[in-house]
Amino acid sequence: MLKGFVFDLDGVITDTARFHYQAWAKIAKDELGITINPSVNEQLKGVSRMDSLNVILRFGNQENRYTESQKAQFATEKNDYYISLISHMTPSDILPGMKQFLDDIKAGGYGISLASASKNAPRILTGLGLTDYFDAIVDPATLHRGKPDPEIFARGAALLKIAPSEAVGLEDAVAGIQAIKAAGEFAVGIGDPKLLHQADLNFTTTADVALPKIVDAFMAAHP
Ligand code: G16
Ligand code: MG
Image (cartoon, rainbow, N blue to C red; front, side, top):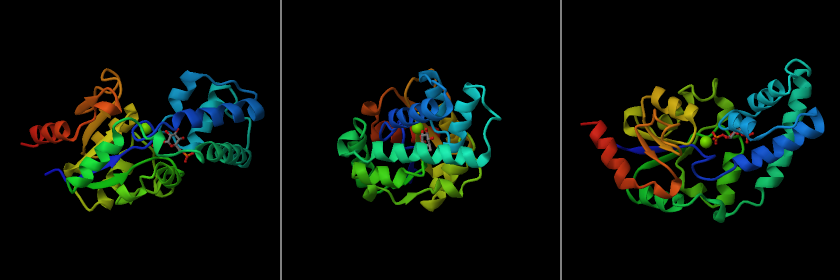
């Protein structure tokens, strides 16, 4: 029986990727002398802060140039700038259709949790005015491994006190869909269906996401 929904944040509820990109582009240029491009940006989605920095250093062939404490300093600087960018977020930054979808699942009595790799997720939900919809938020600082490891989505269901087989996970990234499937949950992909072909059900954009379609597909998969 379907009992709850576990949400990714960036790319599903709001588009923070553009702010991550803006902040990383500035730090990369000013501090590392590396000019990043949109293809690097794709590799940062859903990836933790420190792993994102490592992706950028690898891209600039500077993998072993800095000490861990220097790297921590760059990551802090990026985060300070990122926080200044997201501080202006409002409910108008919710992706199309997602407020209505959250209202529908709340009205349906389902549990709702957040499985975001971002340590800034609670702050972002506050800006969007969505905090009260969430029964639980996974704290990414307590995780051992990032997506595609199932840990974050498994925790998202556990916090709702439901079994993975009773949960739907929503994701826009390939690694996220893999994490949902590995956790034993029903995967809803949002984005290019070719890219997200491992999902159990796909919507091309957030505006298309509809609760009845998810319930039907979930029930068909759990006869
Ligand atoms: C998000 C973004 C990633 C970011 C990560 C950590 O993941 O997609 O680009 O690096 O969070 O964010 P922070 O530096 O704020 O802790 P998700 O899981 O919401 O897609
Ligand atoms: Mg995402």
